[in-house]
Image (cartoon, rainbow, N blue to C red; front, side):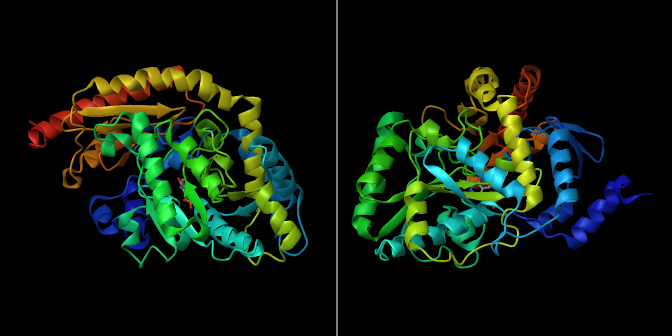
Length: 460
Ligand SMILES: *Cc1c(COP(=O)(O)O)cnc(C)c1O
């Protein structure tokens, strides 16, 4: 009996020795982890042979689909040619140089310099230091405060988790660190009250600028935000929000960091979410889809405004990671970018599969237990509601999302639960047929969850 043949043995070892991320390991061990063993295209397979449509692209990352020969070959060729060398000591290598050139082509025009990390979290911690260093070089060291948002997600390292707006994360380990203020979320469904979506977008933008003015914009270095909040439940902001907010930041000379870890590289149907929202950020946070998840890689885009100061006034930036620009990760990123370009996958998200899925996904909101169904490109969510007209969600104790997530997995679809919202972010290669399958399982999940909610007394 080989290890991979025995689900029970894998579960036993895992329960005995693996402390899982974002997991209550005690509860997990009591039930046993689902063992995922294979993946191909948009499908996963578990150790019991079940085929599951990967509606989350792994964790918002496998944008080009699973098991692609071209990426796998590029990585293995790279490892044979140059296994590893660092980029610290006046050295570089062909792949990191090529990737940097490619990124300058696909990112908005103000981005021509890139710094590499191992993850989105490290990228945000890097930007945290870069922003303060930039303002020190500009002779304004007092501009050290960051504005971020409740419900935003920016990673799990100390600065990134502090920038994030998750109370559950702040409670552990004494976060947030000093110098970070959290502005309100532009989540119209939950907080919009009687305002129209457009009115609410302006309202939250003005609330944020008032917070900034109360603190003093001469003390604020930068604001960070995801174009569309991902881990916070796929919150698509009202279309008035980003234009009003980014104009206000510009007037106050506050840098904008667009956290593109999920939205970047085509997820929204544009190359970067900031292009969809009409903002002109000074920093880009990148990870996840940059390599389609084949090899870990994070990157920071540094705008011309900032790069000029770093290059002309700065000395050594005393910061870096052993694996900054790891050759194998760069090879995976180059291969991914080539696929996105050659197969025109970003256009496909915007003009073909995105609109196709949208027209079906929107119909989920016809159900009495669904408050809204939103989707932008290939990032979407639906919201469970107890009462549609008053836009009332479910209490946390109801664990409605967990109930739905179980039904979804059992019926062959990965959807992620964020409180009482269910989210999807499928691979860009999703076919129309696979989109039909995704939506029909989602409908079934809604029916099953509705039946459970009725029998549990969660709804009348
Ligand atoms: C996932 C994520 C991060 C953190 O990236 P890691 O690679 O998990 O460290 C940061 N920002 C956003 C928007 C993310 O979705």
